[in-house]
Length: 322
Image (cartoon, rainbow, N blue to C red; front, side):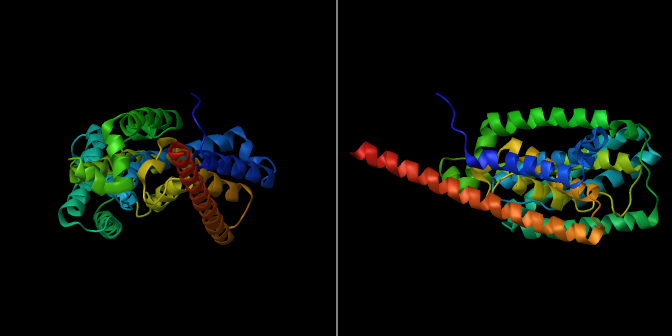
């Protein structure tokens, strides 16, 4: 039986391709040069890596806007420790610290039933403040080998590896199914005996772990820590997920390919405006307007597709009763 193609799945791809063509025309072909396409991919890698972790949190109907600060602080502390020990400890330390931060947030949210947005917003401010305090005391540089790991080829390979792993976990296992089911109706998932608190806790651990992955990559790109490291990454990742057509409420609208498409979309918008020679201030205004328009189109498409789906189910039920 042929699988039905839904508008919800196709719309993000159409939007991404439409924007790419639009900016290609507007920049007189500057965006479709080999150099620029490579640049788009380079900029997309950290956003996509972050989205691979945050999608678990979003799928259960929660949010994590602390990943950028988590990534920056984890990589900074790990680099600082490795300076006085062994530089090869930097990457594993980054992943351990970022995962522990994610676990701490997951514990607070599950234990005290706090709102995930407010909790991660507070942690974003606190983590940034702690990082700035550390940088005021000492200069933090990246290990030399990190320059190779953060290169185009190696970082792309890292992305591909994690896409395969996350695809299997999120799309092919019971854990991924339970995550999306919680986004649809958490009470029902609880009613069948699933420990939703445990799932939520693990989701935040995964989000924290992936923050560490793009954290050490971005640290390697700039060769050291600064107050602007991973700045606004959490917003880019959130926008990438929603531009991909994943609903704020999560559920079964959460699909991995949408997060990847959304990551490319947000980067194409930023890159396209620069390629078209738009100044910084007007660029931010245009980017904001474009994002709002795209989100409105995505939400409208979602509503229309859901209405159509409900109508088809109603007609099928009437036909069965008849």
